[in-house]
Length: 172
Image (cartoon, rainbow, N blue to C red; front, side, top):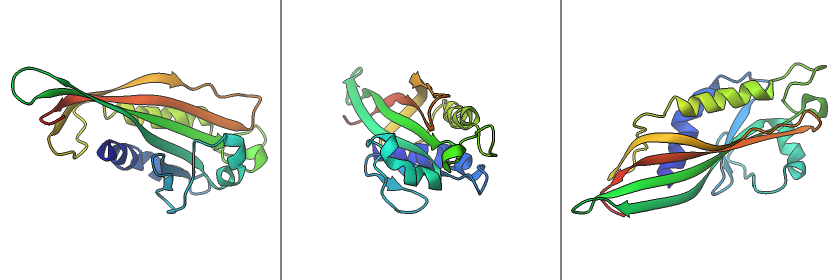
């Protein structure tokens, strides 16, 4: 699963992170071990978002976590259908609370635009994603379980969706 998370964080989301304004950064988090790529610090994105206000004042965050791997025998020999699920979460704090998400009175990043950048980057990697995992060939990835329910009445913003890698492996 490490390969899929690394692929999403580095290859797919790296360009999105690089495209963000310097004064409104987007940091990547490996949610399996809580490591923030850009700083080496730890950030547990499983804790309630309201408890992480201080971190969200530094940057917006996009995190990826592993969910499941399901190899199923397919045909003769040692070939298996493989489905690997990961979860991607995007979080931010309103600029009105010294965060980086757009507020009518403050210049910052609109959450909808940031979500669209992340979502489009993942969709752009749909065909034959090469995660660098030996013995595994993915034919596509699919985005499922989209929850982009941001609140206009809250200072905290969160959206998430699952990414399902589908392909084959020679070993279970």
